[in-house]
Image: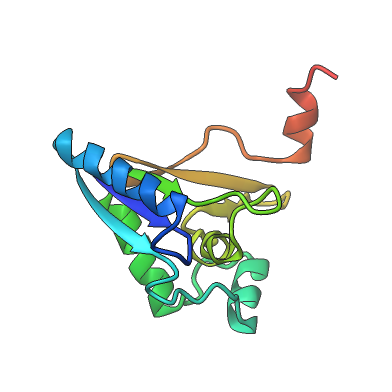
Length: 148
């Protein structure tokens, strides 16, 4: 299986880097291929600009995405699995990785708006193709499926 590994740490001498090295060694020993996105080394732009913000908030998947985002989406499409290696800082991932999520997991690629009611339908990656999650994500569904 081909794994796309997203790495988010600014130092090559960090514990996170040691985890990345051990993980990729294990992938190789198990016969898997992999590709690493070192978000700091590649200078990934984590900030969303106004054009991207409009695209995401409009819910229109037909608007263009930036070239660096298309490149990341193509890498995801080539992969049979994703792995994220990063430290937890102040109870969250580094801002660089949060920006990767915000910019790469776009409307029409990772989610879409359901017709009529404004709910969001999540999409996910299975063996090279994106498929819809069976039930749209909405507050109504969460309340209906809740025990409280």
